[in-house]
Length: 571
Image 1: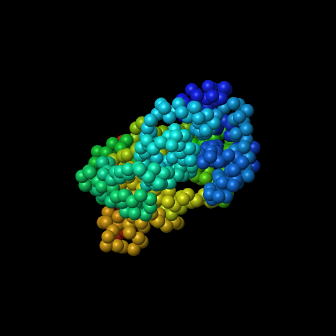
Image 2: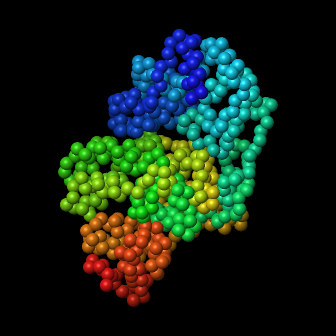
Image 3: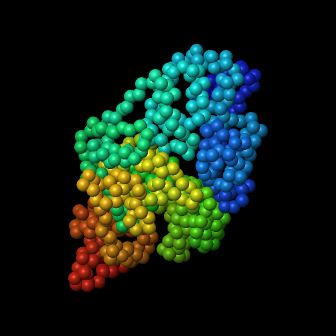
């Protein structure tokens, strides 16, 4: 905003022309350029293309230098370089024709103005004697160039930053500006702030063990808060059990520890991971809020729902036609798949699965009912209330009483997909940011049956793959006992009860709730009530039946008793 104010005041006076109106978004200019790309690249989220243009401009890379910069840096664009160059050139050409400028142009034009008109720079030097820059670890070359013009050779500058939290390399940010600050300004005084007023000693101990692998300016956080519970670092059986564990712990913390839902957060690497938590929390009647990217509001599902309004025919067939039209690739063999494209493909796949599940439970219903059920299924999202679901990037700068970090797998963190290889150093810093969002409760989990090893960053925290005397007790991984036969028995009971009630199975209980019941094996109504997803109404309606199924499962191992059939209701 400072650069725009200066540009608005000085540009007309020195350049004798208006600087141009500022674009609200790059999207409209990029849309038709993207539509002209060959499949499958034309289906890529427009935000991917806009982000790539921003990366180039933030690094002072013009279209003429773009391909060379890719070769020099090893940076991977979201689509093949020649196609991305076509989009970049077309965007700049259309922008000039419209006499518009974007955010990066504001900074770039200010730099050019001060270089070409020393008197304009002199006005800034006279008016501003000193500068303070926060989040300096996220400065990019374009911002650094403007700051140099503002300083005009002076050293009246104070910067605040943490190189451990440099997580925006994809925007062009370089932590070297912070790390090399003393070289650029030899007389600078460096103050290291290591007292932490947010997290417990136990959480900071986990963060400090990871920090030993971060490089950069070495620092050790010291807690000023009282001691708290040990962080939970554990393996769970599979992805479904992991979701069930998180939802169950959310319910337990809210009831037993009186942690408000708004003070809990589930963090994930890419937006595609929000959907199972959205669905499970909704089934458990736990309010939630998705920061930037709820399932039905993301590009893939939004486009599908819009097109389904005009479709006719069987639900599953219609959903498959629409998702095929939108570039769904079931084999997942894609070149240059970015995080956003991974999310879009996962969302399209999930909608196809939801459509087939709907057909199984509603064989005689059509698209209108399917769309209504989707809206109901994800209906507990609330703006400003409930459990926070967000990416690690979105969580930066925030803090919560309880933080859950699921899916800590190699390939997820550090993120790897297709040609996309996020820098390992930056991915490690992402986990550090996630850990240090927690004030009192921290849960770090990974699904053991996911076909991938746990994140190598966990080995760094735990002291290596082998037991170590230096490893804290809180970091010993524990495997959740599998639900096994009881889980299958509960699913059979649910299917029978759903048929008797004439409702979808998930209305009775979500899979995550059944998983939690199978793992806890409650013996009383009070124990059952502590399972997330078992509210007062469901406890009254289904409680006795569920407890009987649990008891019968226990007895069957000895007496081989049959599972009760609840098609006609309880005794």
